[in-house]
Length: 219
Image 1 (tube, rainbow, N blue to C red):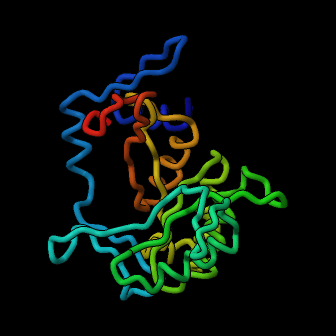
Image 2: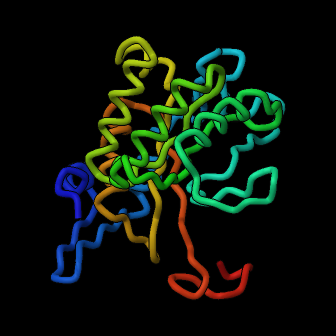
């Protein structure tokens, strides 16, 4: 349900079938091969410090690791279980900086009465950019409008749009929910990052027993 993205795929030559229950997009095999042939096989998720760049593919044919993302609860060192606060997110960014086998920051989900829940992603990225000094910041917008706000924050942190495009110190995520469904929020991320040529991770979000089989293998 994103008119701008639909206009792009129509222009590219995809089949767009608009129905009452939603719009179906199909990419013919020949078009898929043509478009995949244009995709760069080499790119960088830049670190704030170039020593922590995530180079794809990995120079040693290994893989990269990121920490937990989206978690709303924390168990403290004393065993207390509680909701994540913005103070935790700041410490989380500092911790990620020092963990040699963790390659990027991710966004947690906090709960604070003085900050609107619709700005969780913006405030998480703010804490990452101000408390993590070395690595790449990976953020998933939770509201459609926030995708562009997070990019604007990345522009400021990088020192300008051209610098962000040449060394993208932030990246985003677009999730496929339910079988092959993209909601407006994720479509917005796709469009905003693609038009700047910045890296974007795409993946499915299966939930056992809801939009996927209950077994771990099925999910």
